[in-house]
Length: 176
Image (cartoon, rainbow, N blue to C red; front, side, top):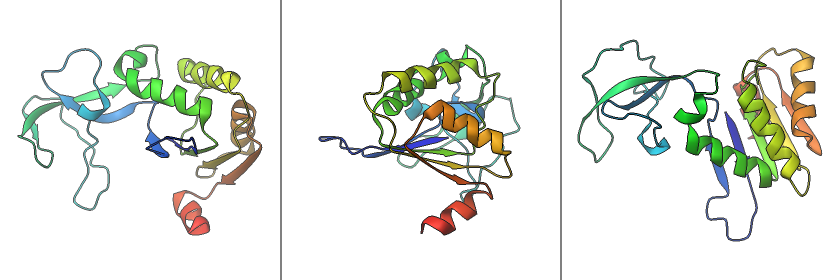
């Protein structure tokens, strides 16, 4: 997950959360074919707001958002492959735009796997288009090797990088 904060004059949404790398456990309307718009995609949660893994690939997975009629949903898998671009077109465009202008970027638990070549190329291209370096990158992971943080530093090229390697709770307790 990448979260960015920008301070652009006229930016009505100065903080955005973007999950561009896809992964598993998304739900999309059953009748949807082709690219899903982010507003249509759901991540199922329990009543405690924890991720509820959706084991069924069957139809009739009725889900209801507040204020909407129930809809039949299907599982969406967005693997680290070129097809992911088709699935997450808008999220990737938003990610590119954010990386090109954000002053501060947060990377939360994303490993930037070498198999996800399209994601790495998108980040490299966006960083090259910047007029100025990212002011600060905050990277949160859990027991990642030093090389992980070195690779993100080389990829994002921020002026300052903060690293939290004891999980999200460590990050949250040190920034409260």
